[in-house]
Image (cartoon, rainbow, N blue to C red; front, side):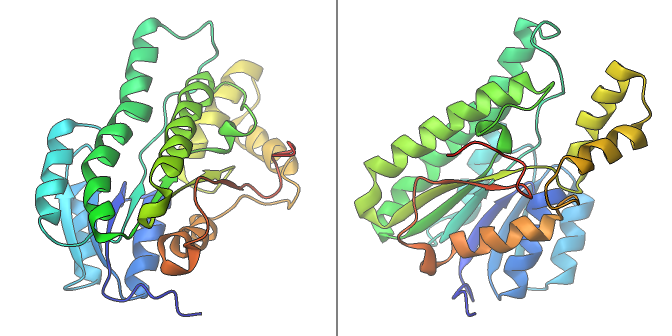
Length: 257
């Protein structure tokens, strides 16, 4: 299937590892051009070297306003066809383990920068009457996950913002969707298993094996599984899909919605 992404320009946040890297690499294979953002300059340079002429890099923390300003300046007057809004998650904690400082940090790292980036990018997309924004959140927005109260709470706020915005600008040709990953074989999942091991006294490997047994398909997902959906949502074929939260979780979410 031709996803019609060739020569289009996309912003990919968190492009140095995990889901961001998988999406970036998949976009490059489709002939797209990307602005890759991450804190690891070395990994960004490696991505750039692997696809000469297709990758521009912004080394910095995307949750920081200065990095967002650099991203906007890098785009300049060019049309940005889509953006992958993605960054790491908060530490694994129970409600009573958290401090108010944890909540303030989670607000900045999960919600605030996404509002700032969205407000910076969407007006130009509306002028072009075309744009795709895909937010990588968590299956916890559909079903709370143990020991992830910060993610369970603040990511739901992102869903509320994205859903509202999708209604406000639906007629402008710009779509907003959320991918809600469950357990995938990426570094981010390890913090959950380490926390459970700490609570139970079981080994990391025992906790991991027990968790995988709870996934209906019986295996952890790979970042490429999520990337394939992200590419479709970033392309013109997804024009009639907006304001949706789609779980990629091997069937783990048991809610009806």
